[in-house]
Image 1 (cartoon, rainbow, N blue to C red):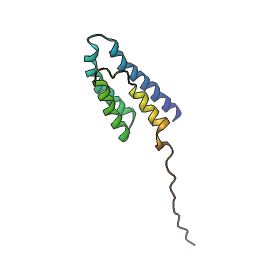
Image 2 (image 1 turned 45 degrees about the vertical axis):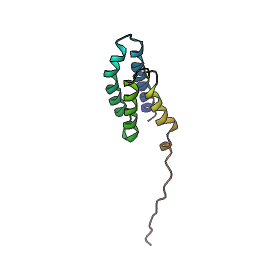
Image 3 (image 1 turned 180 degrees about the vertical axis):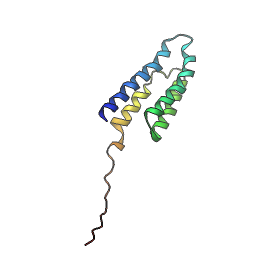
Image 4 (image 1 turned 45 degrees about the horizontal axis):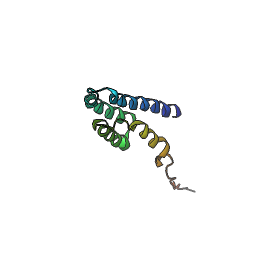
Length: 102
């Protein structure tokens, strides 16, 4: 799990860098975001499963398609949320009742 955790971080950093590159391409850069936004959303939903992944993919799509928001590291923020700040890491203990037949 630990290795997979950091593999996701590396992949997220690369995806964030890819999204930021279009900022530095004059004139053509904003039009590249039209192609990058759906790709980034698809990758986000593949990297993070479940409801959190779906919500994050919508957020990354909106962030990439809007002008002047490419500097936000959405993939890195999702990694931080998932592995550092999420309360799902430590689920509430559940009591299991056991019936003993004598």
